[in-house]
Length: 403
Image (cartoon, rainbow, N blue to C red; front, side):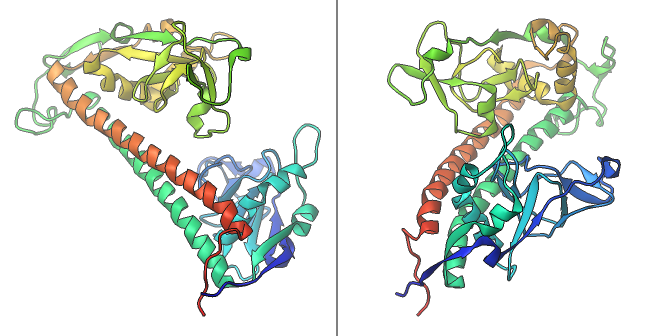
C-alpha cells in the first residue's frame, strides 16, 4: 500500500471564492419567478438547501455543485448548491479550482469550522470576510485520489442520511394524503374496498355539511386533554445524563440539533412524554405538532393526550397546515402566540366509526415507528461521520492510494 504526502495551502490556492451580495428588495418574489435566492444558510444540517425566495435580477451567483457557507452568524454553516442560485451577503460560494472535487472542499471547511468561528469579528453578530477566507491555512493530501477517497467515505454516509430524510418526508406526506382522502374527502374504503363517497356511499346532512352515514359531529376539544409542561429552575438543569435524571425537552430539541441536550431530576412534578406522543408548541411556532423524543417536557410544549383509538386520527388532524395555521392565528391574543385549551373551542370534526379509526390508527402508527427507526439510524450515521471526519481530514486515519 502507498500513502500520499500532505501539504499546507491557503484556501485561495485551491478554491475560487465568491462573496454574496443581496439584490434590491424589489427584485424578490415568492412565486418562483427568476432564479432561486438564498439570503442566509437557513437549512443547516442538510446537504442540499430548500428555497422559498426567488429574484428576477440576481447579483452574485453560486454555480451548481459549489459549496455554500454562511459568513455571518452562525459562521461556517455549510450546504451544497444543487442548482445555480443567487446568494445574498450572508453567504459565500466556494468551488475547487478544477471544479471536480467540491465535496472534499465541503468536508475540509467543516473540519476547519472551529478556526473560522474563533476568528469571526463583530460585537453583535459575528462574521468573517473574504480576506480571511482566502488566507486561511488548510492541510490537504497532495494526491487528488486520496482527496476523492476521503470525500467518498464521508459523502456515502451523508447521502444515506439524506435518503432517510427523504423517505421520512414521503412517509409523512403519505399519512397526510391518506388522512385527507379518508376523513376530508370521505373516500375511505367501503365494504367492497371501493372509495366510499365516489362509489355512492350514503351521505347525510350535518352542521358541517354532508358527512357519511354513521359518522358523528364532535367538538375537537372533547377528544383529548391538553396537558401543559413543567419548568424547574435553570439552576437544576445539568448537561450530562446521570442516574436519577431525565431528559428535559424544549422546542429547540425538535430541530435535530443535539448541541444543547439538558437533563433534570426525576420528580412527580415532571410532565412526561414518550417518542410517539403528540406534542404541540404552545409558544414560538404555536400549534406546531412534534414527536420523537422521550422525557420531561417544558412549559413551551403541551401533550395532546387522547384515547388510543383516535390518537393517530388526532395527530394527522392537527398536522394539517390549515389547522396549524388556525391554531397559530387563534393564539395571537397576547404579545406572543400562546396556545391554551380555549383555542380549540370552535373546532368541530366529522368523527368516524371505531372500526375505521382502528384501521387508520394502525397505518399511521406504523408510519411513526418507521420514521423513528430512520431517525435513529440517522443519529448513528451522523455519529459515525462526526467521528471519522476529523480523523480523515487531519490524516490520523490514512486511506491507501493505488501503487
